[in-house]
Length: 201
Image 1 (cartoon, rainbow, N blue to C red):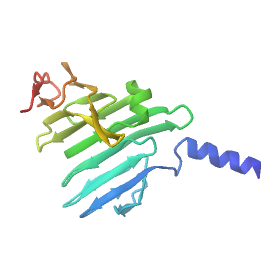
Image 2 (image 1 turned 180 degrees about the horizontal axis):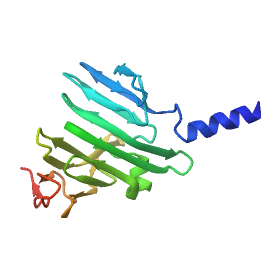
Image 3 (image 1 turned 135 degrees about the vertical axis):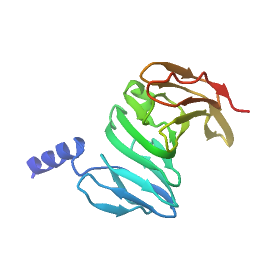
């Protein structure tokens, strides 16, 4: 019996048939495509697994991963979970997500706080390196990517406390660093330098 428990623990720790999070909120229609080819209707409470693809139609899907990372996928968007590894004992791991089109909002969890070098969110034209913060990105029909750095806000002692982290936005030919709330940049192609960040009014 002890041997069987050990085998199951090893399989789960290596991501085999393991849930890495779940859908916390669902509005409208969305589908989750599994690596096996299965398609699951996205509803509140549905498990998220490694290599899932989330496709929204006229709906919105909010996902929370086991390390408290939160990703909101808005209408007419596509998000691919390329990699998710997490050790709850050390609160370290790796996250790799790919936004194919549409708009996605990312809020950092434990992995970004403790293994920030292992967090990458990519689009057809850019790669975003996360250093413990929130941001949104929008990919249009041409693949051009718009990234906005957002303040990360929590309630502490009944007061709203907001902090701003830092992200890097990189194409094949250049990189910019953003560390001010509501800074934004655009990356039109992988062969174009990210535009100099501007603060949205």
